[in-house]
Image 1 (cartoon, rainbow, N blue to C red):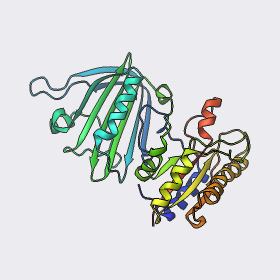
Image 2 (image 1 turned 30 degrees about the vertical axis):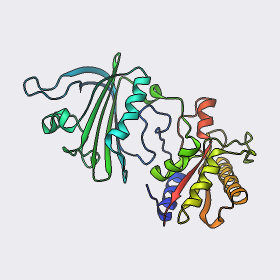
Image 3 (image 1 turned 135 degrees about the horizontal axis):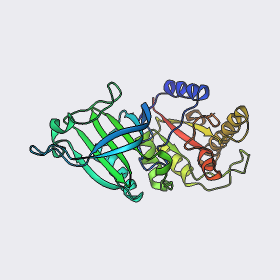
Image 4 (image 1 turned 135 degrees about the vertical axis):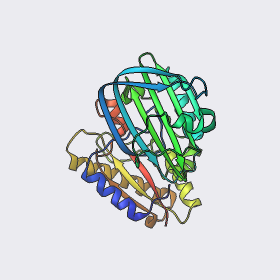
Length: 305
């Protein structure tokens, strides 16, 4: 995803003025970081059926019925080169790791084309759109819980609907996988942003550890290979302390990264800037020390002219 400087400035202003949460990094339903939540709805008690077979001319579609708390979320992923299968395969692997049984995974013609699609429960447009020539469906079941996923791609935009039945996002948290040194640049180029998750600071301080840090050497290598690009470093904090102090602390930590890139890796200062937004954009809740540790981070956002 390519982001202009103007968009980044707007993005940072929005973050500073409102709270919002993301769950794309630690969640079993792992999505590209460019995924935007465009619709959300929750029902405390609802009867719902999910598809567990492809469409058959004689039998139609087999379903399982569930009753319980149901949460629907719709995401849009713009400007992606990913195919549906490339995006969904890691989700299938993660759900299997959480002991969900994959009852159905099919795409377009195998599902049954339009005959299958017309029987799907889909959120209203413009939030969710289905391209009958390019869609895929996953149904995963575990005991009395189920997850229904519908994905479709129109042009370079993926529309993704996730329905959680009898389960919640915090039930699907995975151990975070850090990118390897060789993958930092590839992830930054693909997603437009990356967490520099190997940085070490003293508690309550913006003093960056001596390192070396794989994320910074990989980031410097990426910038040297893309002389037309620049980055914004965005610092984040946990919720301990006042917002204003956390915003300043997170900015100071981002500035420490900026300083290291300039002094140790000879990156042109005009290609890097630093911002801090405190605890306004958490990766997860702040209920435990482990969760707070995940929220204390610096991200790099790619800027292209």
